[in-house]
Length: 162
Image 1: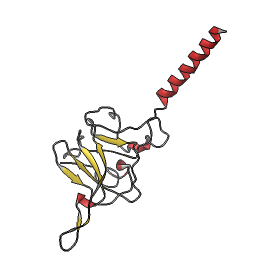
Image 2: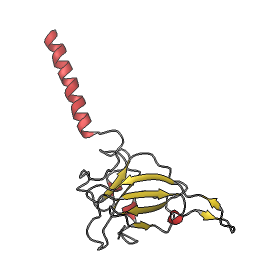
Image 3: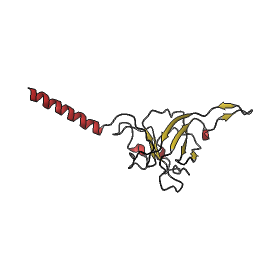
């Protein structure tokens, strides 16, 4: 009887271990220096969608250096409420609308960024990316699409920071 109980317990533990290795839950956010996304390329969210092994990304992409070939690691992506991260001003120079940063996502050591953290994109955001040396590039247009590489490098230019 005792051996059946132990065997059942071991089978239960083995099942949990197998499940936890193939179905990872939790929040994933890229961090400067991390090399975890080494194999990511193209549209990250083709694989990392809701229900995927490592969770569904809300925002993900790749940042390239000025040469548009090599990746630009260890920068930061910001999601702004206003274009170019600038406040909207009244005619008298007073602030009409103040820009807010609704999300900050570090670019990892490979040049990729991603997060499974919930971010409300339905009103749209104006992304910017700052390189590790402090240079910033703004996306001029409003987007509600967090799959950055589904457009960048396909129908519009790649994400490049000088």
